[in-house]
Image (cartoon, rainbow, N blue to C red):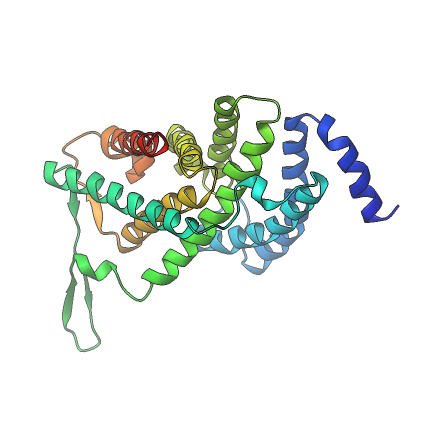
Length: 292
């Protein structure tokens, strides 16, 4: 039987297949195709569990996400639909929504860290390095924006675009076949949170509630963006870019004046009350945008 015949048969069966079965089949096929690539890449990188991934994470993540378009294309063919169904379509307002999401993310992080700096809960850590001539250079706050800023932003856009298409696009839409929008969002957000355990179990566990809530907020962003993923992608990318830039520069650190339950367990912002409040405040803004 040819691939075309197989796709035709699956198209006939698709409406009667439960949403959870479709989701399991989707992720199983994706992981099944990725594992051989991941094993070869792990050997090349001389990495094996339970060693920490460190800077090897990006290579493995890239290999996983590069396979994703093929899997989604197959799902689109089987469902006999287009990428528009998953919220991936272009219209005049798409770029505006993307930029709005980025602006909202950066504004929310500015408020979050600004308030904590003012309260003395976190501190700005200037970094020093010594040149070849023995001169000591102190990096100020502006120095976190350097030659790596644009590549980091582009990487954040790629990662967020892929993840939004997976979780708020395919997964959310497929689950809504059998569940209400809120229930589908709750399930998709749970899967979104749990998949982060693949990379870093110990650091991710305290962040699971925050990651779940982040998924719910990004689902709301899709709704506020008139079912277009652009707003959610911009918001997600802005958060990734901002946090990554600060963490890479080691720019801020807790002062210890309040519990890490407030500022974030192990300096992970989604594992603290302030990070949760940021998400709730963002949700309120998105709700207002949706109801304008």
